[in-house]
Length: 239
Ligand code: BTN
Image 1 (tube, rainbow, N blue to C red):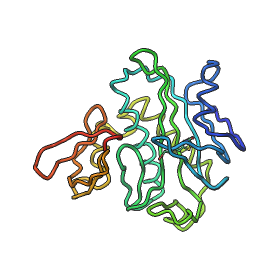
Image 2 (cartoon, rainbow, N blue to C red):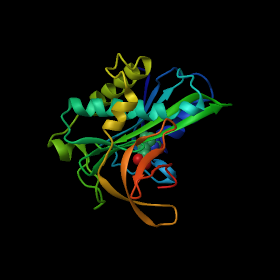
Image 3 (cartoon, protein in one colour):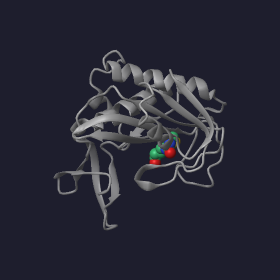
Image 4 (cartoon, rainbow, N blue to C red):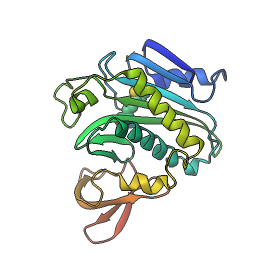
């Protein structure tokens, strides 16, 4: 594993994106930072993490060579790889909150931000950014956020955890069945947060509605069974 360790950078995703255009980085280059000054979250949010306590890293994947239409599959593999590493640590009640947050019970412990570099209809490279709350103990009173130390009651080694996640990811991307997952799509769906439970959602107009999460479409949209018994598909901006 080619590992670049930084004491501080704006964002490990941005760092890899800048470097990748020089074409000097190999497949599965990993950049990890002790602290990020402008950590990026999904949908333009910030990712905050106490310096040195957690994992904030990005992995460059150049070998996928898949069409844009299949880009959601990478979300699935990344979620499953992290899920597997956390299962090995006995983290309780793990779930994947669509599209790819990792939850323990009702608390988020990990966020994923995948940025794809496209060439026409092909994914030329993907930058997989992972923020995993490991040894941080307080979260500014943010609701529904936790860390592995809070859940397991012990300090964890960041390097070991990083290696475990990257190795699982390599296995899954190289050969899903070798990674123990012949049916990644079904496995991802079976691990979805609040699957089959009545849940409330908010649409783009801030209106609430009720439905049951049933799964995801091949394009990565969330399938919700509505109160009138009709199945609808939503993307991230819609729900
Ligand atoms: C989310 O909003 O849940 C996604 C958070 C992703 C955070 C990680 S930390 C490492 C990488 N670099 C970034 O700037 N963001 C991702």
